Image (tube, rainbow, N blue to C red; front, side, top):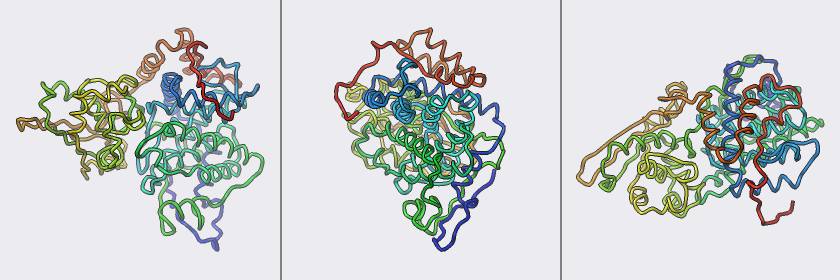
Length: 500
């Protein structure tokens, strides 16, 4: 790996292309690095994971709307839509939009956290859509996915967006563009222009994840993927982009991030070095913000230790800066304490999530978020008793450079009415790669079978799982086999009409 220094240069200094971060990203995307076998197998796991959560969300309103919009852009030689017969295709960018929204809706797929945040599985829908449209092979797709993960993970390690309240899809656009370029074996110049173009147009604020969180949280990554496809198409036609997009005098860094005196350090593999960053990422066992994963595990354990939950006086959660200020009481979002808040808001409220996990000793992607569940009086009592606190020790663990020591957990102290204190802590979720029971292929398949039960047939389930696990051997033009069809009767429609 090479640690690249990234800083702003005045316009009077013409920074050579080869010294620009976008070029360095494009260079590794266009190299001929051998694919790492473990990275290949993990990519397959994440395709299964994406399919699980996408199929489970097919009849949720944002996904229905996205699908209906995509169906307004049908194309004979196009890309497939989750849930619909593979013979029906639409424009690649609209397939990426619909499928990306389906993957993101439940907040239930993979994550990587470092200087910033990400759900790198968001890279897969747009890369797959382009792969289907252009009749690429399984190996082509794998190359693109592995590159995209490499780029996004390393941008997340080096550049913090959240500090400036910029949404993390600003790292996703460039990673998708790099992944598509890698899959299509485009030259460095073309990928370089595409990376710059999509970053330029995919900057948005974190209001999408603040206050009353709306369905845009699910659409935002799909939007970045759609923009990336369009950026690559434009670059392939020989068009340029704002440059240098990271280092320029009026660039993203200069005007939106740390400013003209900023210095960032972004790690990237050497040219032709195998890409393994996907192995540093982790999926979710539970449908909630990743920092909630370990706390759900703690809640389940404390349920067995506290005989009478009615005896709880207060609960203090000592955790990292991110958990406290983004999904804890440090966010100062009254919506996070509101039983009538949206599902999107509740899955970003550690107070709500911990209260339900403690009470139920379980977590369900649908049942745990119903209006009735959120309005249960005993739950509200526990919920309102919770306060989160930043503990610098946990913040330091959160930012530890060693993946084996990086922590996303907390220490929880429950104070009972009689003054007795019961505490429990956990460094990381049980399902984390370095947790008590790391997710393996069998766990991804179990998650798929659980989430797709009663939605797709056993025949369709078996067919998909066989195809995806044989991805390395899938020939050109066969990526449609990664689509999953449900019965026409299952899919709901949105009666509200739009432009398309």
